[in-house]
Image 1 (cartoon, one colour):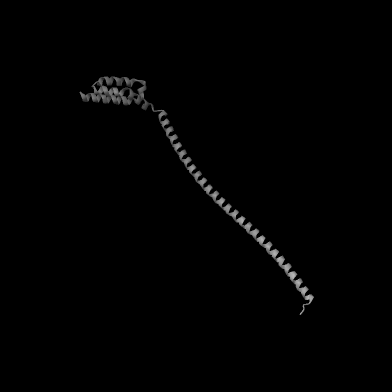
Image 2 (cartoon, helix red, strand yellow):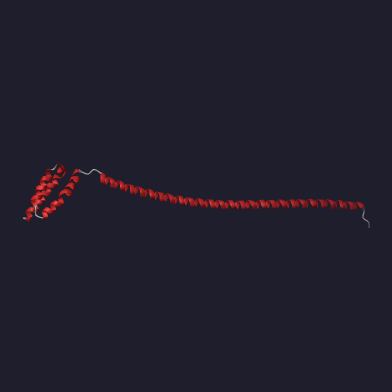
Length: 168
């Protein structure tokens, strides 16, 4: 049995076509594999880039929170310092006001009278020198700087007079 040449040629032609198709498919498969590898590499690079961006975002948020807390702490410290400074300033200004405010003439005159005379009067009364105290009180009652406290001086004269009568 001999094969006819046409059948052989047909088979060879079909084999050549199949081989060409197979080569084309292998080339397409190789191209698809390289494309798939390229897509996989691109996806891997994008995934790594996305991971890096997420880590950077997380780090930035953490740094922002740290700064916000520090800023809040700094603000609280400044508020505390400002309040303390205001309190100390108010305390100093109040002290200065109380020291420098104009005093009533009667209060100032009585303090002056007290510093100048009362210890001497107490000493003289303890020694029994009532007359000396009464004459000093009369002199002080006529002094112009003691005019605002004239009622207190006259009351003091009455007390000295009562003490004198009680002791005799």
